[in-house]
Image 1 (cartoon, rainbow, N blue to C red):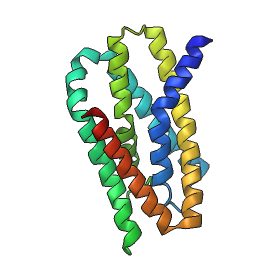
Image 2 (image 1 turned 90 degrees about the vertical axis):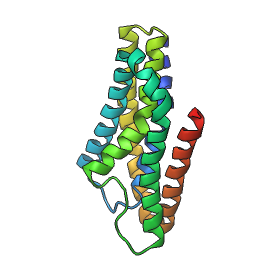
Image 3 (image 1 turned 45 degrees about the horizontal axis):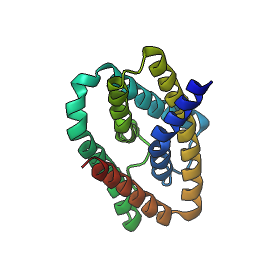
Image 4 (image 1 turned 90 degrees about the horizontal axis):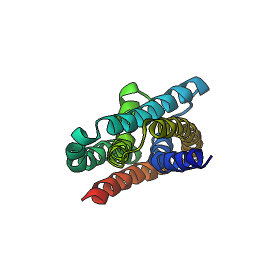
Length: 186
């Protein structure tokens, strides 16, 4: 029971940025069907838990790369998404980097999952057992899925109600998250 609670707390800590990105990125989306929301959430959850497992599996080999490049990659991806949203909020351009296309979904999923890769590496170096890792990966999968569903629904409602100001704030939040990723590791 303690292991399950620890895995859930671990998953909650990893999925906070998925929730934030899905909320902010969905403010410009007019409407999502439950099928579409589930698909986006599944992609985020699979990428997040997949990179956690990859980090754990290849911990020693990836530690040098993740330690040096991951914060920069995460920052650049979130700067791209958030910057596009900010530009869209202050111009008449309708295009924004939201969760409408597969490319944008994957950018958001990867940007928010780099910390899962780093966490997997850390767990590998701490000698987490295979059963412990599987429990954590399943918890990350489920908690990320739920957080993204809630984030999309909340972001869509905020976008409908507040429009361009919500898009501007969402873009700023994503840039700030990117800066936090960059400066946390520097």
